[in-house]
Length: 458
Image 1 (tube, rainbow, N blue to C red):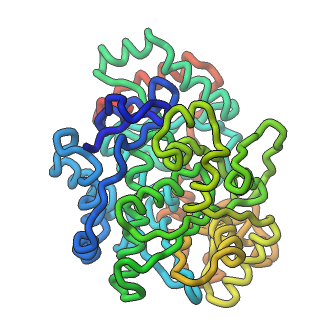
Image 2: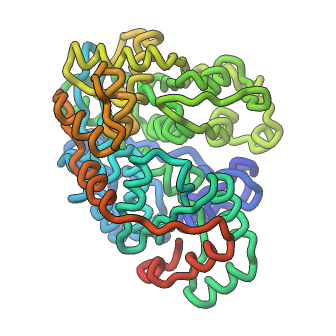
C-alpha cells in the first residue's frame, strides 16, 4: 500500500516509497509518479471526525493514509505538517471558506507567506529538502521578483540569472546529467538533486488536503450533510490542482464535477472538448492570468492506469471518461476584468485575475444544483496592475509597492496581505545579487554548504 509508480509503467511494476519519489522527482522513464493503487477511501464517519479538527490536524489525518508509516513515521509527519501550517499563515483557519454569492463559495488559498496557493504545497517542501531557485532576472514580474529575493532564510535561497527561463531550465537539466557534479555532491554532502516544481509528487499530495477541507467546512457550517455533492472550479494552471481534487474524490469526498477555467489561452478547455492537445500551431497569448499546463497524471487517471495508453497518447478512447469528471470553459481578458469590477461592486470582494476567470466560467456552465467551491490561486495584490485597471482606478503608479498601497485604499472584504506588503517593502531596500548566464557559476552556487546545511536534499 501507499506505493507509487510511473504514469508510463504498468500496474504490475514495482512501486516506490514517498521519500524515494520526492528525491527522484521525475520517473526514470520520463513519466510522473502516481499511486500504484487508488487513493485510500475513508468512511463517512471518519470524514465527520476529521471535520471537527483544525486544518493542520486534518492534513495529518489525511496524509497519514497516503504515506506509509515505515517511510515517514506518524511523529515525523505530524511535526512537518504543523511546521508547514503554523504562524506563517495569516489566517488561523489556514484556508478559510467564504460565501461569495448564492451557491458559490471561495476557498481562500492565499493566506500563506507568499500569498499563493502554492504555499499549501511548498511550505512542506523545506521540511523535506533544501530549496534553491533559479529565476530569470527579466522573466518574472516585479512583484514575484521582490518576493523571491525577499525570502532568503534557512535552507531556502533564490538566484537571479541574467538570462531567460530556458537557460535556467537547461542549466538545471544539465546539472542532473552531470555525473561529476552529482557524484561530488553525494560524496561531500550526502546530497542528491531533485525537482520542486509540479512534477514532484510532494508538490501535489498536500493539495488534496484543502479540497477535502473545503467539503468539511461545508459540513461544519451545515450547508450540506455528508454525501451531498459539490462541484469545484479551478484555474487550469498546471492541472495539478485539478488532479488533487480528483484524488480527493477518490478518497471519498463527494465531488461531482471539476470545472477547469482557462483564460484566452484555452488549450485545456479545447483538450477536454476534443481530446486533442496540440501546441504545434498555437501561439500563447499574454494574459492577466498566466498559466502552463501538464496533463499526464490526468490521462493516467482516466485511462485506469494503463501506461501504454499514456505512452501512445491514444486519447480518443478516453474522451468519454474525461467528460464524466471534468468540464471546461474559458473567458476573454475583457470578461475577466469585468468580473473583478462587478463582484467588487456587488459584494465588496476583490478577486485576483485567476479567480475572476473561475467566476466567469462558473457562471456560464455550472448548473447551480449544488454548492460550487471556487479555488483562487493568489491574493489580488499579486496582480495589482490588472486589478487596479479592472476597478477603473485612475493614475495607477508604476512602482509595485505603491500599487499595493493604492489597493489598500480601495477597501473591501479581503484586506491587503500584510506578509506580501512587508516583503515587497523590505526587498526593495535590499538589492539582490545577479549571476551571469554561466553554467559553471551556477553549479558552484549549488555547491554551497549554507544552502544544504540543514537538509540532505535540495
